[in-house]
Each structure stands twice: as C-alpha cells, then as structure tokens.
Image 1: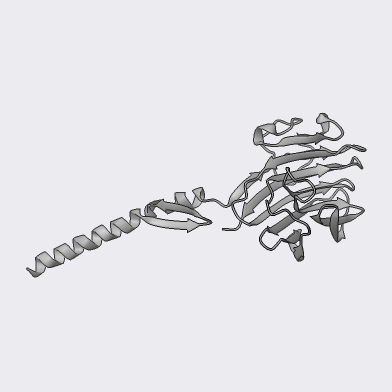
Image 2: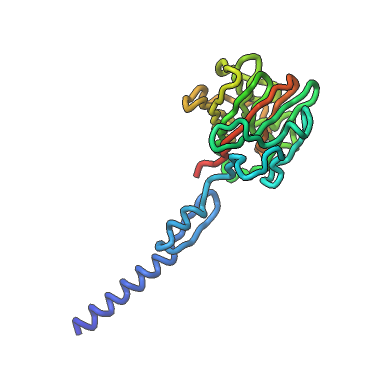
Length: 239
C-alpha cells in the first residue's frame, strides 16, 4: 500500500512539473506571453525591446534606403545627396549621408511604435558644420510634437525641448563622430542626454509636449547646407 501511494505521489509531481513547464506566463506592458521553459532561449529573443536598429550596410551605395522603411520627407540639396555612401562610416563600411540646402531642409524619417512610455534612442553623427541632427516627433502635430532631439548648431550640441526651444549641452568639432543617446520619459516629459557615453543632462523638462507621443524618428540637415553623416542607429524601450 505504501509503495502504491508513493508511486501516485510521484506521478502527481511529474504531471505538475510538466504542467508548469508548458504553462509559464510572462506579462509586461499589458502583453502576455506563454511558453515552455525548455524554449526560454528562443522566447528571450522574440520578446525583444528593440524597436529597430540600422547600420545602413544592407543597401546599395548611392541609393536612398527606402527598402528599410525610410521615407524622404524633404530632399534638401537634391535626391542625389540623400544616399548611403561608403566613403564615410563609423562602423562597417557604409553610413547615411544627408545634405540640406538654403531655404530647403533634407529630412528622412522612419515610423516608430511606442510600446512603452520610456523610450531610448542613440546613434553616431558626424557633422561637417551647423544645422542638423536627429530626434523623435509626431508627424501629425509639428508644433507640439517634438519629443526630444539633439542637433548641431552655432558650434554647440543642443537638445530640443519644444518647438524652437533648445538647451545648449556642449561645443562640437566639425568632421568628428559623436555618439548621441537620449532617454525620453513620456509620463514625466523629461529628457536625459549622453554624449560619447557621458551623461550630460538629466531630467531636462520638455515644454509644451502633446500627450499623443511620438510616431516618427527623423534625421535632418537644414538650411546651411552642410553634410551630416549618420550610422549605427538604435531605438528601444525599457521593459
């Protein structure tokens, strides 16, 4: 009788353990994931917090990367200047070139989906002069839809905190690569900025920001007509 009882208990434990393996549930940001514990490595990759990464290595040289979901909003000095090149790069062998023109901006965009109210983005920028950068916007509300951005102007690296509202961060040297990283907190409307891995500003208050949130990442070169190079772009959210 004891042996039978022990066997039944062991069977119950095995069934319960097997059940727990196949019914593991993970919930985050109103999304629920169910998976087998033996497949946790593959699940780790599929539940990624990366919105997109871009190094411009997969596109033919001297073409615009439309196949990667990029859209040329304004063509600045002309379509021939808004292209992937291999004469400059931060890593790999290629990067993106953008060139504005007097009274006509060059601006390229890619749609983003806000999976969290806490979003990060970073990239490498090489300015040849003033008047260009990158950031997050809502394309439907251009005046109150600027959600942080970093640009190079008047010899300074600046952070955009609202429509035509900026804060100086530091000086910059033309023709030098800079690593720029931002953290935008949509709940608290604050911005943190790192330059070359160093936290430069923290909890900078964004002003007059729409509650809708960003839907576009954009890169630009404006009216001074200087070339800007962009490489190793990454956008992600905090799990």
